Length: 390
Image 1 (cartoon, helix red, strand yellow):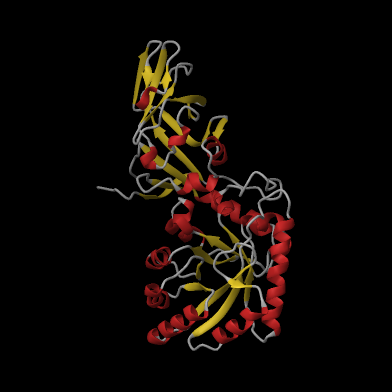
Image 2 (cartoon, rainbow, N blue to C red; image 1 turned 90 degrees about the vertical axis):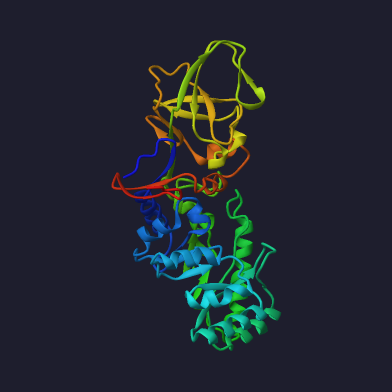
């Protein structure tokens, strides 16, 4: 296995299964999970994650945002159902048919063109209809007028209406009322659909927040994205209902150490000056890796189980930290940017708060310049490196 001294993301596959099992325990035994793998599994690596969980009996399939994400899974041997949660354009329809991707449909014209693609390929395209219950984005209006459109879709050749879903907008807030209002709108519309003679095999509304705290919303399927990766959707979501383990850690090593006197500027722009003699360590990581520049002069890393504050601006490829008070620090010592070192932990929530972002953003922005190392039972199971030159 290749060693990565500059930076790597450690992905705990056992934590993924732990999270899925605990999420499953919180829902009805007949409800299956839909694991959301969009944005390369929120930065964790969609293909390795999918391979690891694809055979779980309580998993229905996967959700992605783009056709390209779905095709990548198919080309890597993932044959579970894949729901395209995002928008698909006309040029994608033949690909959708060829790779057995389930698109989201919210317009009759879209369904007609998908029907034509299905006929060209000689395949039945299974579609999920989206209904807008408060997002004000794509989706059928939850009105009687939409029923006629859905009836027309159901009659199209080579199209099978498999699911009907909606998206909660505020299930991660203190008050659950907005989520219940949306759920009522969805269920009322579903009743109209079924009374019109249209059977919907798969009904789903839940995202990670509502899966945890709005049990009535866990229908045939429950979608989980951020919680799958061990993070809660917001600080308002109760952590005592479902226990989650963070899946990603971000590691580096000290590249260089130097000691400078007082009144010396550190990093670009001179935004920090030393107040006394300071031992400075250079960390070979920067915003080009997805480590936010907004952590400049605010964040810290962990070295030998202690905090090392960031000094000055984070550069494209490096930043500096204060190691004056860390005994016996040496070049090539491990550095934890995200995760746990001895008794200290840095979370994505903490880093997000420091730079005005959410935990979703932090992990999804760790880009392909950062190798991923996948651990199973504490041992390296797989590595992915976009720039592997071996």
